[in-house]
Image 1: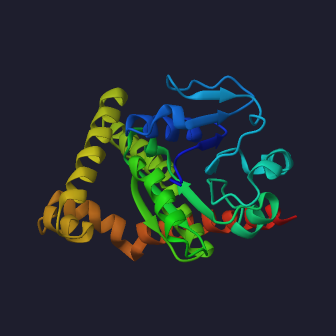
Image 2: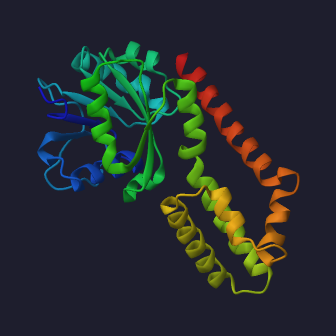
Length: 267
């Protein structure tokens, strides 16, 4: 049995919907996918939509994409239909494998943490599971590969760390772009022009860094001539490791919140 033969996607909101569109765009047969969502999500042509789980049917893989606080509402409905299922993939932030396994009874539970740019196929997806079932692991990775970079981590605490960096990271980058544009406007550039310049600068620099064989740290030093204007600006960011300290504190705060949500989900 091919594990991606019958996919149930429970929840097709912002992230679930983005994943769904990327799957269909990557060539997964829409007829193999059933969306279970009581709302009216926009779904690609050929994908079946049900408000509740279809009676008398059983998926080969269940992808859980509801809000974490909705788990205890959907689990009693889903559990009789998916107990013993070969693969459950959950994107519920902070909800641990043990909690998911107890609530739904799947054989293999894989936690996935996608970030926002998966919507354009340029995302990051962190995966973790205690299972060594190669078929289940391969199927989970195959589902996530159309979304961008897929990285496995060996434990849930490390998934929390990955979530703080990559899952929350787009929000931090957006804030940086906004601050860069505001700083340009403070020098006299029109605000709309400063924003265009900041966006293009971050986009181009990111693409360049991704394609380079050197580390971003080396690239930064390479563009900063001794005594030049870039070096003067870097001196401000580097003084007392100001930028590094700020980001360590930022990610630590996000990681702490991940741990708190995990504790709340166990109750």
